[in-house]
Image (cartoon, rainbow, N blue to C red; front, top):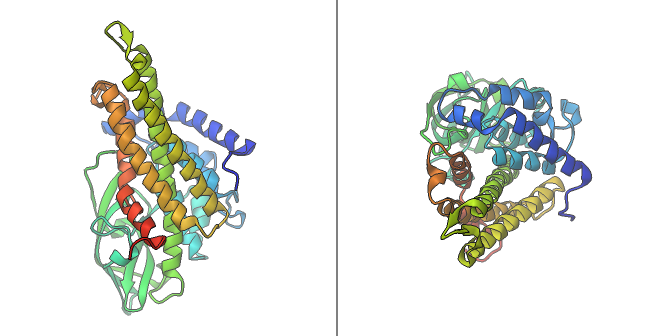
Length: 370
């Protein structure tokens, strides 16, 4: 397994970075934060460049590339704090549809940029399948869903919502158009990663919108595998934001003077920036390793995903704290763009389980705890 990016992968990363610098500068992010801007042109450009189609099979109109390419795009989205439905649609919605091998045309529509989607899985802040209590009961009209889902990424904006609910025979997955759901947008730390709570108050799903009925073989395994992609993509986006926080902090330390000297010349601050650098490098390496395990369907992919998410979360705690302090606090003022990155990194740690959760999950997978 080679953790070095190939020439094609490096070129893709550089091209994505250049495109985002043009279509999503900090002024666009600020406009979205202030409710004065629309991120739709950013997504339209991504669709023009076939980014939603990257990892979708050619049979479904995709480019047939792998998860490494998706992770590289996710990392760049984090670097630029891009508001877009990419993470929800490409790294959450599409993998579930693909894993369940559904011949319903959804993947084709995602690849063509015709539809956006998300997954309503979490309940009461947990993304574990064992925590799902929303119910699905079969009726003459279809399946009736009851329950509440929390922290659904792009839940108030996505065209289609995959709802995970539990029937008498196990978990099922249902495709519900967003207008059919009672959705409450949340007040979040990072408005460019909008979350919503979803209430399932007797929502009826017709048979042609059942992705996997309760009792279907392999549903839990499919959701676990798809969840690994969502986890690693979020980790990569978090690392991307952390990398820029580190870079901007170093540049600031070179020009900000105290006692007639740049603050970066003080030994104590050099040590802190060295720790930041090591944390970012370690987290990025684990993200690339996890992306490769998914791309190669390596049996270590579950452990690797949790390692990457845990490292990204621990990285953001260090980098956000030290980056903010070394900026003397100005990084959290509204006028300074750094706070966009700080908030994106914090939000990325919280979604799909934070560092503590994935440390615990990893310990269980390795048999270190009961």
